[in-house]
Amino acid sequence: MSLAVHGRVELGRFTLHADLEAEAGEILAVVGPNGSGKTTLLHTIAGLRALSAGFARIGTATVDDPTARTWVPAHRRRVGFVFQDLRLFPHLDVVDNVAYGLRRRGVDRTTARRQAEQWLARVGIAELVRARPRTLSGGQAQRVALARALVTEPDVLLLDEPMSALDADSRLAIRGELRRHLDAYDGIALVIAHDLLDVVGLAARVVVLDEGRVVQDTTPAELRTHPRTRHAAALVGVNLIPAERRGATLTLPGGVRLHLPMEGADGPVDLVCAPRAVSLSPAVGTLPANTWSSTIVGIESVGDHARARLGEPVPIASRVPLDALEDGLVLDAAVTVHIDPGGLHVFPAPHRAPPGP
Image 1 (cartoon, rainbow, N blue to C red):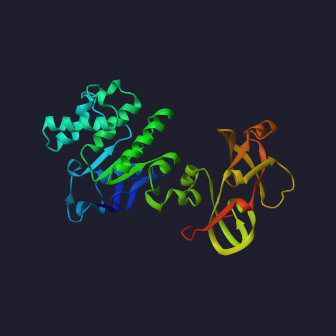
Image 2: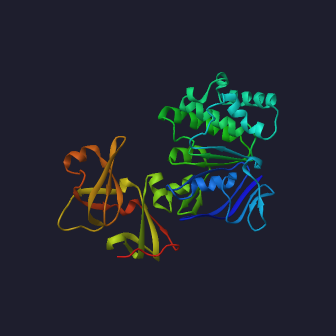
Image 3: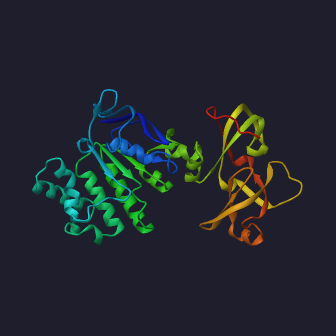
């Protein structure tokens, strides 16, 4: 079994350039900022949105090809979908919600309900077969939606932010259960994720979307060390800064210069560094090497420390000890920013024009 989508979806002001292939057994996390095309990609695969050009194939079957006038409707595609808002039918009990897809495909009611009950037992909620969706907790409703998607034995399973509606405790339990089911699933799964734990805990491959295009197709480990978009960098908790390299000197936005211990090839580069490699101190008149002046524009608590976000000329995040907040590192404070060259990772970025001064 395989999946291939190469085409374009025109949505007025937005165009999705879909470019994706996957094989049986692969679990892909799809990440990107709001409006980047993640849900549109899933809807295209499911048959809820038509391609404007190109083609989509599931296995050997072409399910969408505008040029050949080929279109397979959603209910005839072997695709399971867990929607972000779950979309359980309020007028049906749990067992009939799960049996719905089978009934739509012509399975008789008795058989469909028996298979639905088997799946409800597999996801751990066999006792809820007669319950109505309005009586379910978030975790229970998520299990019902997953059982409804899997009961039809789909070739492709699509999950649109499956953890978004859950509290922290339920998210932990559901993530573990979902991983167990995905490990046993022999089809192709695509999971839209906004949490690094979901990416690392569920997927072996990450597809990064930005402005309607696939800009990175990689592993979770590679994403952590070399994200190619600011959203991906924020997801994995690092800074991504465009720069221009000349020998051992990096020129950052606003003309800020950093000096590295070693020379490298000239040209556009991506500078990746963890917030812990960025230190702050009260503003000073004369700036030492590898420093610049900025202002704290945001502060958030992150466990036993704080993360300060800095404004122009280089938007960047710094890890700050909590007691430093009492020493003047507060919102709107003028600061001197220093980057430890030993904490930098520099990657060539030939796809991007160098930043302006």
